[in-house]
View 1 (cartoon, rainbow, N blue to C red):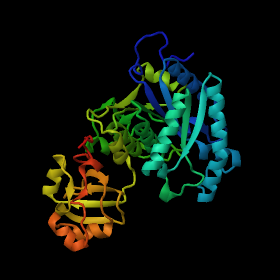
View 2: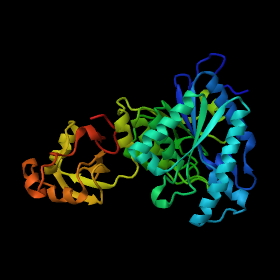
View 3: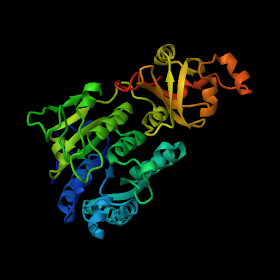
View 4: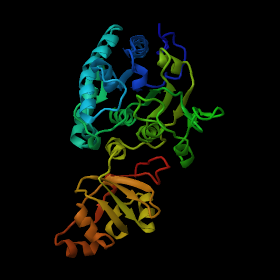
Length: 389
């Protein structure tokens, strides 16, 4: 019997959290030789049921469709062509959804599958629709089981890893905890597989260059992510106000182990999380372009001002009005991200100009701000916690 929800009433690590997103790595759920790890999945379902009994809302971001499809279609462990990966995902998604439905149903829980693409979280209207679907499932007492739609996504329009997808989901739905269950038990100061004296980092207050330097490569052949993607996930999640945990998922009842204060790395939520609209902007994974600014403009942005054309030095990318762009400091560090008010071609024409000069150059009366402060998230630098400007 799982104790993840701590039904006895004793305090546990999970007690304060009400809405929890749990990400499951492929290697936890699927054995390359035998397929689905049914006993492990059943133990996790027990954990989820125990948490649900405590009136906690649980969302699952589940990898494993392609890995499971490999075994179903007999594709082995070789590198797959794009069409083979999509075929594997197609076969695997049916099996994966069935497995989750059966496992959660066995413990008295309903579930609903949600397949998303990069565009579903990057485009505002689709983002809101996806959020509404997840929120409705939770309201109806069901567990949303979310995965990337690998049957149609290509390398240009996909997440490529479920760590960042899980963070995006956590931010989207307002989770206060994101748990990344992995084949590693946390962040180490150096890759533990190569260094016997590697030291686990139990708590990360904020993501610094030193923390980023600790990231290594993916730990297993089935994984598409690695510690680098987990740190990016931490940046997205903590900016939105969620705590994030990296914990070992290979043991049975992994959430119970976390609840019992098992080994993990905890990334603290930002003390100044951005509001919902800006959470979407901050979490946008693929900025359409880059705008580099001078020192004067950098100082203005850090004081909560809008970005004006006069402070722009260079522009890269083929963006259009309304796209998300990254704003870089003179040193090349990303200090902000926001929705641009100009197409790239016009932005190039007015870069460095005073607001009073814009109309004569473009031939029409235009906005003074290239990115208005209401449409921008200022992060100071990429190594600092985002704040709501």
